[in-house]
Length: 435
Image (cartoon, rainbow, N blue to C red; front, top):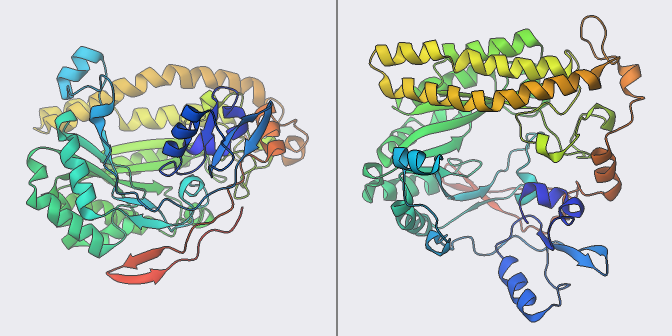
């Protein structure tokens, strides 16, 4: 098992698997497979967690991988479907996006982000031809691609070189690409034009909040006006802007969150996602005390469910507000209006998401009933959290266990100092210290 969750909760994960790969697995998976074939030993494999004589062993963390240019060969995955679009939906009841990566990591220090758990604060590039080869090899499996990079367009020189090669390969005739960017992309109109020609059809922005004070508190380094400019610039380039927001920061109210959904409509966002505030229990960056975290099961740590006591509304109110905000944006009447006025594809986009969210809502609303049983006695008549009472609450078992095991602490950083090129120049970044 690997990834963000396993890296942070290795002890709990080892109840289900024999081995946990912490952080990046590029340099771990093959040595692990060889050791398994030979019956061990496992103590020389950095970043590996496992059981030895019934005791959990966490090997020291290794350095970041030297080579992230290896192409991911989908041909070796048994029965991986080559069907796409409507045919795949009818045949298997599913849709898919093909993942590809051009960069790894992010140097920004937004205090809610989970990316540093895997990458530290490094920012590394794959070679352009490695990315092109990766895309070319995956084209037979589908036309909708997702660049999983946390920050696709930070480096002008590398990003433009990649986009130019994508244009040369005429990928836009065979594929559609979705990428993640920050609002600073509005300052790069030439790059946005390149993106459109290269086949980028959606740009996802982590907008987080329409409250400038909240943006400052989470160290997002952007303002509401920046968000408005970025959305408009992306639209001008002929690309669809998508926005995600965090619901439940201290200071958020039901009214402010519903206003966020209306802002998304007024700003002409193509997509709108509300993600409930989530911190790993014991994360040193977490502003929540253990008593304010609600983690009955890891099943609820997906972003769809409320897992904390907000300061300005009850957890059940926040859960229902998230559902209501999604309904405001993903509205069937809006979908019908787009279809009737000639924007058929956008109408279908709205309608399919409405159907998808409807499937999730029944679980969200059921969770709201559970939250009602948890929140009793901790709020006043105005739904303000009573701090003196919440301090006396017994933390949930998962929270206590994670804190006691120290699982949420990030591995000691052995990352080399990374090179971050801004606007074609090289700038060194200091990396994250031990959490």
